[in-house]
Structure formats: C-alpha cells, structure tokens
Length: 160
Image (cartoon, rainbow, N blue to C red; front, side):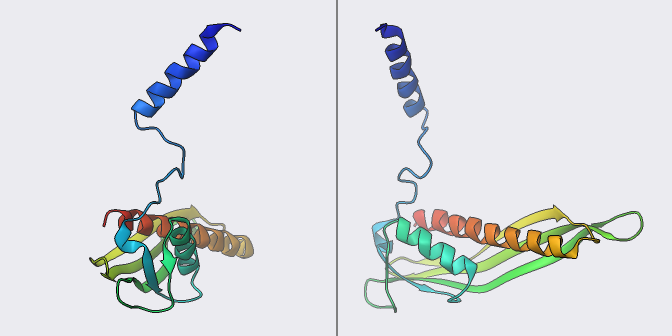
C-alpha cells in the first residue's frame, strides 16, 4: 500500500486538531464541578424545562428533587413566548411574523449567577390563507427555539 494516503490523513488530523476543530458534542457540555448536583426550579411541563433537563443530564449533572446543601439551584422564571407582526403585504394582510422566546435565568447555592435574561428571536413568513399550516409552523419553531434556548443556558452555565 502506498504511504501517501496515510501521510495525507495524518497531516489532515494534525492540522484539524491544531486549529481547534473537534466533533460536535465532544466534551462541549462538560459543566463545572459546582454544577454536579442541581435542582431545576422551573415550570414542570414546559418544553424549555424538558430540553434543559435532558442537556443537564447529558452533561453529567445529577438532578435532585429539592434544594439542599451543596446543590446549585437553577431558576427559570418569567418564561414567555410572544408573536408579533413585522410586515404587511400590499393588500394589508399579515406577511412576516416575529417570534420571541425569553426566560429569566439565575443560579444560587453551590454556584452563583446574577439573574440574566436569555432570549431568542426568529422570524417567519406566514400565509394568511393557510391558518392551520401557519399554526403548525409556529409550533415547530417554538419547540426548536426551546431547544436552542436550553443550549444557550448550558453554554452560560459552563462559564461559571
């Protein structure tokens, strides 16, 4: 077998690792030791709460049923999902919408973080004649935004 393909592969691996490239999910979710045991204080059946629980579990955090000694309390409050109109068509029909998903994040206990507002904004084109399709599109975007918001929260927690 020719040595060129192996040499080329080895050089590629060295260059990619040298520039900071890593596979998605490869140790990116590691949380600080102060967040090893957490209590999540949030709306229990929210899509955001469910997504955040999954991400904290994947990051190796142990979820407990209540606050206690050595437990970081992650508090999500003021969760809001709003829809607003951005543009109208020439005949006055709504054309483009803006969705905003926001929550207040705070951490107390083993780790501390002052309250911060975390938010996402998305826009989409809607067809006034297709109300059902528009409602389905909005619901899909809401679920996707909740997952992205959970990712943002985990990234902020990693900085503690």
